[in-house]
Image (tube, rainbow, N blue to C red; front, side):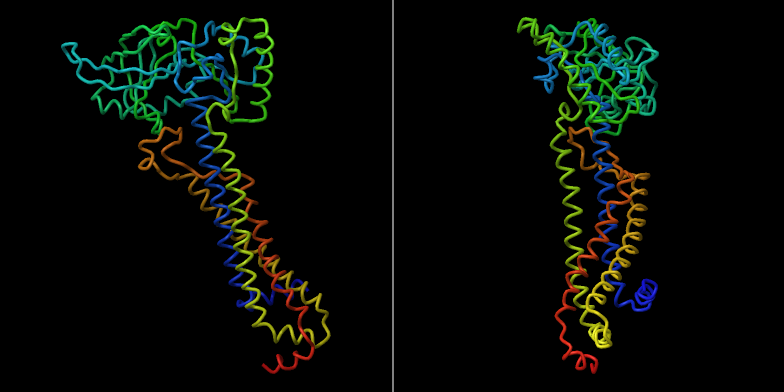
Amino acid sequence: MIRFLLKGLFRDRSRSLFPFLTVLVGVVLTVFLHAWLTGVISSLIQSTADFSTGHVRVMTRAYAKEADQVPNDLALLGIDTLIAELKHDYPDLLWTPRIKFGGLLDIPDEHHETRAQAPVSGLGVDLLSKQSPEWGILNIQNAIVRGRTPRNHGDIVIGDKLAMKLKIEPGDTATLISSTMYGSMSITNFVVVGTVRFGIVAMDKGTMLADVSDIQKALDMQHGAGEILGFFKDNLYHEGRANAVTAEFNNHTAAASEATQAKEASFLPVMGTLRTESGLSDYLDLVDVFSEVIIGVFLFAMSIVLWNAGLTGGLRRYGEIGLRLAVGENKTHVYLSLLTESLMIGTIGSAAGTAVGLALAYYLQVKGFDIGSIMKDSTMMLPNVVRAQVTPFTAVIGFFPGLLATFLGTAISGVGIYKRQTSELFKELET
């Protein structure tokens, strides 16, 4: 029976071509959009973790309340001991200190007079330690555009756009004018040994990257850091594990704070996850909802289209259906045969649509799409080149809606079979 129905679908394109194309287009769009959203969010999470919050972040409680303002006067002290404890208690994460700071980068001329100035957003990271994870996390080696990476104390790299704006060449001296941890002015000379381009507008337009020990010295933060970031060793964000680590750490410090005076308790460390610290929780929740909406909209739209197609096809097939009923075929059997046809069309259309959608998504995953022109003033940690991401779920997300849409469309339109009257069959057979 199935073989008979399948031959009928291939030989009579009026019954199968339009539903097939409808399912194909709907599944392609569903698969492609899901891969696109997954890729954009994954890129946003990855870059936010690498350059801003880590997978988990440790700060003082006072610093955490004003983290957006980067209050280094509320920074952690004695970080060597704290990092050693974190490595011991949570060995499945990589721990590294960072100092975020702002200031004015002054470029002198040959007479040591100011030639150019520009505000910078700086980042003090561990660049000189042999076992520093920062090289892999920030991908500094591949981000170098001109010059070289820092090798000695006093070496810095800056964003290539900033270097071109200030007309800086590798080897030039730059003076950082900022404020220390205690509020006094800080003036420190550095050597610009290279320029970088991370492909993230928020980082490239005014970045200064220096070793954390040099920034500790410049800002009078010996053995201090604004933040200690933790990264899972596979460099992927595991929300469940991050929440478990954070809860355990905060419960431990909460017990210690009960025996500490209120003023001192505000400087005890507290840990937060990427979701809570980055402000991305609303975005991530919105994307989850949006993904469900996409599937729901296409499922509803395809069902309506296929319902109409079924009604139209039913009008054309009145003679066939009437003949089948006239020779004694049961109405339920006719109805079930139509449903079987719809599942065949849905299976073939979903398979073809999934293949085309995955091909398009994979192409965008490899090539990417440059959105730098619309991200000039963005402060989000989103790469200029966004890519789709093909996952195992992408391969099945469009298949079941495609099947369900054809089934529902035929199920609704096929109900008309039960309304047929035997007295009308001979009239339909004559036409």
